[in-house]
Length: 262
Ligand SMILES: [Zn+2]
Ligand SMILES: [Zn+2]
Image 1 (cartoon, rainbow, N blue to C red):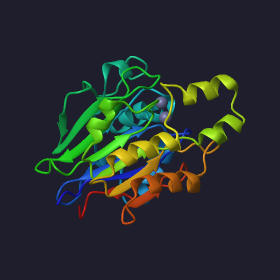
Image 2: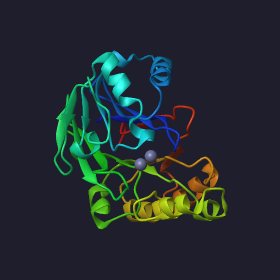
Image 3: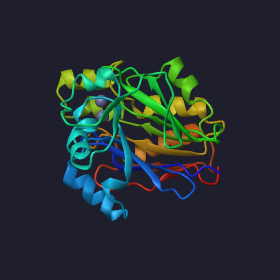
């Protein structure tokens, strides 16, 4: 049984960070994105009984501030190996960071965890989403998809068969259009290189529902979404009453999304 878990530590447009833990004793960890201040990430890890020195790596999806702003300070202070595409590295100040590159489409391994980055349409250079599995558990995969303007056939095929999925449900289209954002920003968010709406995510879930047992909804906009609305439409799309669904929040860690028992 795979012990892989993904715990959203912070999720939303003000900053994102996720803790991945795996291994027989679940004693291996990495941070997927760190778009929150170093003080906050230290505090949150401490609340989970962890220290940053226990992190084997920081993996970065793309160079937007809500995903990368805390990466360099944390990596420098604790000398944590940091992985990102060359396209992402180009747009970040990484002086003194122990830097490694990964290529989109090429699987790589960190201490027994296999990471497959795949391409998503978003307005940052070489944005990556991922599937993850532990050595020996190729059939038990966890998927991660946020910051995605629209769902492509490639995304669908990469996520087909995942048992657990952390996926963006950024906004309710009606709330966004009626809300306070300036026109240009609204167009960016709903555009092909923006973010997934509840409706787009629900459509994806409907396609992936066979085999999908657990879903976490991530990166909800505090202004342009409502957690209950997002959950309702996405849960309905899964059409599996036994599936688990959690909505991650901006200011508190969510319960872990785990492959344990699957
Ligand atoms: Zn983001
Ligand atoms: Zn982004």
